[in-house]
Amino acid sequence: MKSNVDISVEFAGLRLANPVFTASGTCGYADELAEFTDVNDLGGFITKSITAKPRMGNPVPRIVETDSGMLNAIGLANIGLDKFIEEKLPLLQKTKPAVFVNVAGETIEQYVTVTEKLSSEQAIAGFELNISCPNVKKGGITFGIDPVQVKEITSAVKAAAGQKVLMVKLSPNVTDISVTARAAVEAGADALSLVNTFTAMVIDIEKQRPVLANRTGGLSGPAIKPIAVYMVNKVYNEVTKEAKVPILGGGGIRNASDAIEFILAGATAIAVGTWNFINPDCASKIVNGIEDYCRRKGASSIKQLIGAAG
Image 1 (tube, helix red, strand yellow):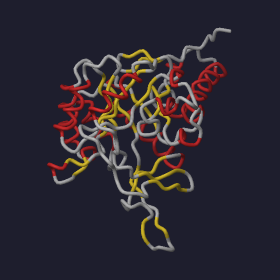
Image 2 (cartoon, rainbow, N blue to C red):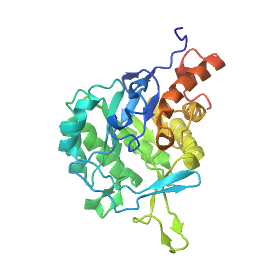
Image 3 (cartoon, rainbow, N blue to C red):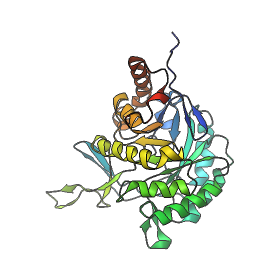
Image 4 (cartoon, rainbow, N blue to C red):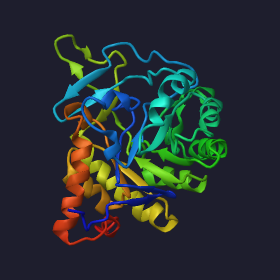
């Protein structure tokens, strides 16, 4: 029976079949999930980070499980731009969801190089700008914590993106996330992605030293969900609602109930991350769960729920 609920969304000029994305770094380049789920069920897919040159990443151990999530310090390990174009783009051309490439680097020039080279690829709908990276030319200060640098890098990459959508992924490790959100929007961001992971540490009490070789890592999973929901709502009310810039919300989403929280808080779409490691088919189940929720609440369209919590 054909559903009478419309769960499609308009996202920065793109019409998505539904509001569910995979989060960067949790699903590789799409083909890794083929045995477990059909990514074509989703509205969007975000690739693992791509840098201009291949990266080995941080030494191991670089992942540790926590009571309600995990820490990772992968260090942007990836195959590099050229190999991505040669090996992964042909696979992404066959997928239905809107494909966003997560772009990373250590200088603005590196971000621009990757974006420019991919800006004409038809398989790509847009870019997710990973600004939780250190700007080596500025002494290792993370791009995403300084609104001046947020504006500078967003403006430069927006110019390199051509007609593609530019989504800026915000770091939660700031005093006021609305400040960096506003900086990104003022510099031309078409959408915002929030939140990225929280800096955290786990210590092995027997060895009396941090578990991760990098000492610290990014905390993700259910532990961060209430904070992430709050930050999405704050940015929605203080920045994006008036600017009409969509938010991709994420942080600890496990099921449709979690996803609906983010949408009610102001997210136009949501991204599933850590829970893909627990249940690789969870994103597809969330799509169905969102539709069931709308039907139960008498909502003919998911759009009626965006920001409805006030």
